[in-house]
Image (tube, rainbow, N blue to C red; front, side, top):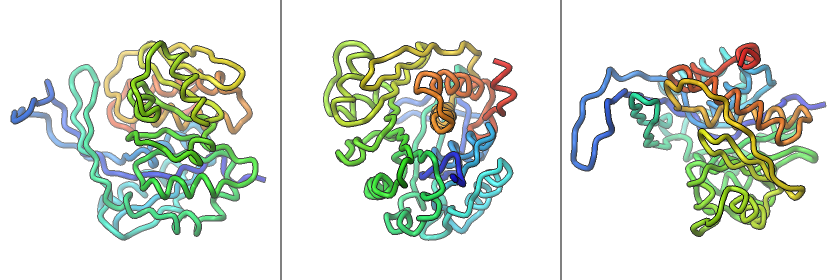
Length: 299
């Protein structure tokens, strides 16, 4: 019996957000809106997004013993996330500095803080969380050696979902555990270690040759491509008016991971995740924008 539908292992940040008419160039200063602070980080975002949808969700992460850490814990607990795996101390809570332009596009700089202190020993000490999880989702805002330890710590029958963001070359043992590996075009090129030619189907075939059991390539307004040994399939985007894209990819990944755990096919899970990601961009902020299952159904 699984205790959790989804265990997320990853980062928890405070998002410091400023709206700008345009992003500054090198050496340039521009004026922006008032600064706002939101709970964020790819790990915390995924956990909250999944919990809002109704998934039994836990998070393994590290925050600082500070106001930002308390903000994150309160946000996750309010969404129904099990925070027993959220460790405290070692460094200040991670911070993301985010600018958002009038089209909703964003630029982000992350100071990892306590996220960089989530260690392989922390993973080994969280055996009960892994034993109770049907699906484990990760990202790369934590040390790569910790990511590798997670790949080694999966319980029998558990499925690993990895969004390698920010992208970095991955060890073979991590790639081999991914089911799926979720990437955008930029991440796909970094993981492949070379310039990818051809179309998304060609990229998927190349990535699969590196070891993942399945691959999802997100294509923005063109939707997504899902691929495994049986072939590939396009998943259309859901058309909405974007207000803020911050955290939308995390909502997509969380929804896909959860639905895979319910027994849906990769294409079915990705189609549902596309709705969740679309709903998320219609509101400002990351976690504050995440929809309930009822809101997703209305799309």
